[in-house]
Length: 330
Ligand code: ADP
Ligand code: DP6
Ligand code: CO
Image (cartoon, rainbow, N blue to C red; front, side, top):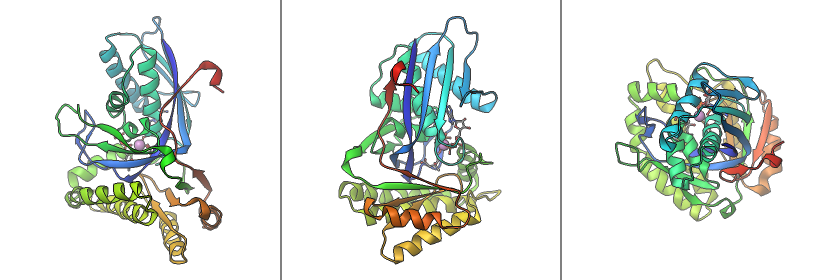
């Protein structure tokens, strides 16, 4: 009745931004991401008959309030599927800043889903696990898989066809991602609240959704052909379109800082000197830069020299969910 799982975060190249069903977490559009090896969560779930409610520690601190509710609501779904009413002790360690736009909800809920289902005795297929994980945090359904994965929004009202599928495995292509840290503090507006406000109030949201199919087709082709320019161009443009929708919301908002703009401009300048590098940004101020292995030194040096940058963390393409045995835990 105990299991541990490790899951990596992912960075969306085509963003999930908007829900058509908030309770089931069904998105308005397909999204596509690359799993990152540099950021991850390790979660242990133990079901214990003596518990009268779930307990949750994150980085060895007891969690209460909204973050606790998200975990216990998710465990309720696992208990329903398994038909067992046992409470659990959940211990999670984030090797990623929490709620700062580094996709901690993706690695966090993917690790939780994998550990919680295994510990309760369920053996789900990857598709089934992805579909369940989606209900913890949408972006997390893509972290079940390594390499490149697409979350198919699905058509059904019950969410039965809304889960991620692999697009290309980890070993398909060695691209790199530099996470440029400007501010690793918790954001004021969660991804969940930000996208809700955008769907409800931004007149730009319709244009965003309409622009997805062609971006998705182009990026999938780019990934399969290992065409870095194509992938980078589409990802950067898609990110800018997503962030543009927030400026149209009421009240308007942005996740960017002035330093976010500095990094974006520096990446574009770097490109004009012949180094292929492209940026993308999730719901937070920090920027992720896509580049190729041969340019690592140049990219790293350039990013580190930007004023306001506190850290640059490098990732390769990461693997999917992994179950750990006790002796592997550190
Ligand atoms: P992020 O950019 O980090 O994904 P979000 O606003 O999407 O930010 O989600 C952050 C929330 O995800 C946290 O406030 C918490 O509720 C949840 N979360 C983060 N890490 C974990 C974890 N290891 N286990 C369970 N839930 C987590
Ligand atoms: C900008 O998956 O964190 O990172 O489903 O409400 O938990 P919830 O939101 P979340 O949103 C991620 C938004 C994004 C884009 C992406 O990862 O696709
Ligand atoms: Co998130």
